[in-house]
Image 1 (tube, rainbow, N blue to C red):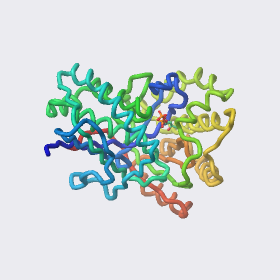
Image 2 (cartoon, rainbow, N blue to C red; image 1 turned 120 degrees about the vertical axis):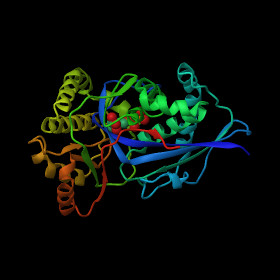
Image 3 (tube, helix red, strand yellow; image 1 turned 30 degrees about the vertical axis):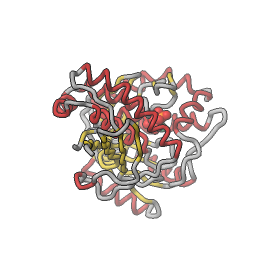
Image 4 (cartoon, rainbow, N blue to C red; image 1 turned 90 degrees about the vertical axis):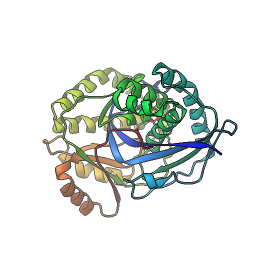
Length: 357
Ligand code: DP6
């Protein structure tokens, strides 16, 4: 039987200005622009094997991708997909087939989607580690599929490397599966406005990332549900009105390499998002007592000077910290000393999704 395989890597990303609320639910068009930081090692790998002489179809294989070619991953975890998740991925695969046709043809890359697809995937973080896997897994799946469907692979790699517009178009297809995944195609600082996603100018040093896992229970409210519920908060419209100013501020601070003020804006932003959760009709919260303990511990050092940590939270209970690389060891020791009962995951600055082979 003749087959060909494509393996893609995509990192997770953490937003400092959050995507929360959708203007178009079916296409994951956000109500407001967002700005994120791309991670490096917390990532997904997706391998697509196209069996050419078999009827068109798809199966999610319970095996890891071919790890021999993956060198930066110490340990890989195979996601246990529920029926709902399999349905969501299968629906996305159909979308990628349809949408990649125009993109590949407009870049004269050829499109060939016939054949049976076997999908193998892995994350470098375990399920329930408090890292949203949808961004990295949809990005890796999309990239791997588009590459699989392309008939001129050599040219694809060159265009993907050099043409940000091409990458943006693939990111747009990925967005249809999960919104935040579109930001995982670029790095380190990425802006997503409406349909478009692109890297932003900055004068920032490389940052180290830590996430303190204070709670690993499955979330009771998914981020997709949160996107709908926040619209019932009385503060939602005010947030949208203030957004252009907030975004301009953080972009200016990024350009100026001003960590102190990025730290202050990021703190205010995640607090605002969680306030929407707390004031929705029905109100809900991701916070645990441990979340508050950590937040009150770190708060005095936020927005103080150029060595301040940048702190943020996603739709979950865990807390993300970003710190200048040269202060990484010192900060880690501090975290470990204070919170030795919690697991800490560590990462660094990343540049976005790519084809491995
Ligand atoms: C809180 O991208 O997970 O992490 O488009 O429904 O898949 P869907 O939502 P998702 O939302 C992420 C929300 C967030 C903030 C952010 O990453 O910007």
